[in-house]
View 1: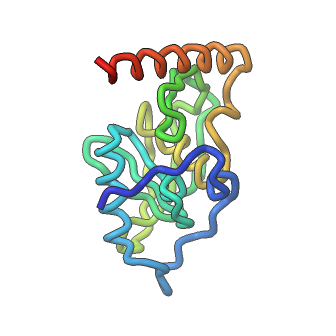
View 2: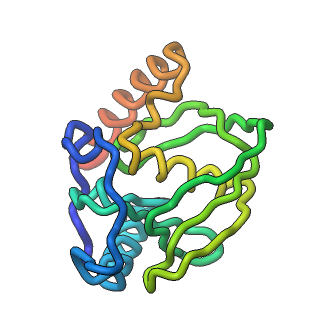
Length: 170
């Protein structure tokens, strides 16, 4: 089922979420994972956290070689080497700006069965994991922006939005 994305001012996007309790699950983790993956793919995203859909669960999905789900994710180590790349977010359509993130991260999370996984991610998977984990901690990617870059991105977003409206009328 494709879920509806919430607006940036939604309260769940501004608070740290509690862990998903596999001993007493608030919902079916398999169904939740499938719905998040379907919603991410439908919206052409590279990642999606549950709270972006108004759900109070500490879980996100990422698209790497194949989509995968991370319940109760955390970073257990990361390199000090940072990489700067433009980032976007499904919560803020058409808003792209440079963000610095750790190049390599070691992580721990649970899959949809509750099994704990330890992995090391590099590149776009590491970036996506950090971005989505920020969501679950109530941190918007705009907090990582240089104010000048953010203002430039907002102006460009307005132009893109106007152009898209104009094209939609044709």
